Image (cartoon, rainbow, N blue to C red; front, side, top):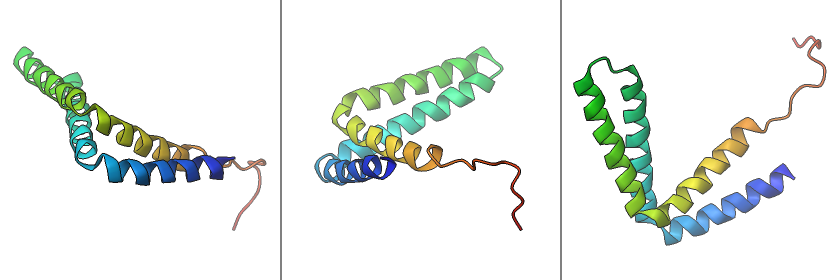
Length: 99
């Protein structure tokens, strides 16, 4: 089942990249900017820094909203990364001794 989901996501990713390449790049940049600004906002100490990072979060959100067709491609990439990294099979017996 996991292989089928990954196969469908890869096929959808190839189609989405062909159709939505530039909006996907811009949406990914906006998401990266917003995420970075949010992380910096949480550790900022002064009010001026919080205002600056808040404005950057808004700019990242506006970049994402202007490229909504690219959000589809970014969502497919995120889902593919999630299924490849988080959905690994766990060892049934944690007491096994591997050399």
